[in-house]
Image (tube, rainbow, N blue to C red; front, side, top):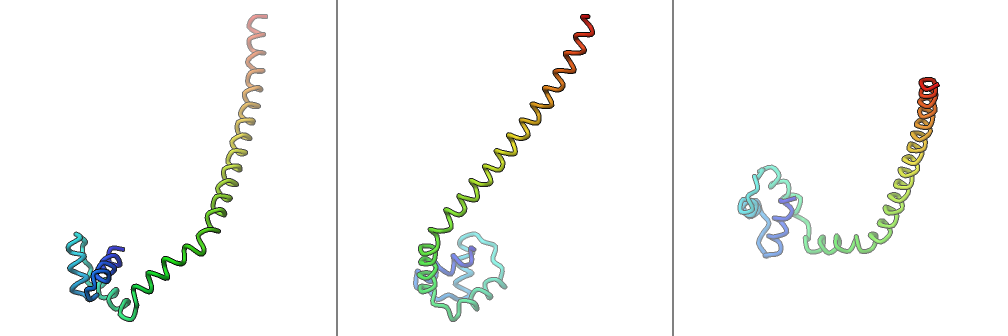
Length: 114
């Protein structure tokens, strides 16, 4: 991600996005620079209008973001309800087991005290 950010900084400042400039920005940020990643990014951005790509990327979440959140909340609610039902069933089962044990203990005490 640092490599993309470095390219965005160069684009915003009006500097040419080339291997030397990209390496300089990454070095200044304290990133261990991998030459192959720098070359790959420069090659990938060669025919890309970064300003246009940023505008398109910013517009995409605004058109689709509204419908994804309610679906995720609905899934979480269903999962929470299922977990609560499971816990309630386990507690009920544990209570039933405890009742059986209490009866056995009472019989033992009855035998002791006649």
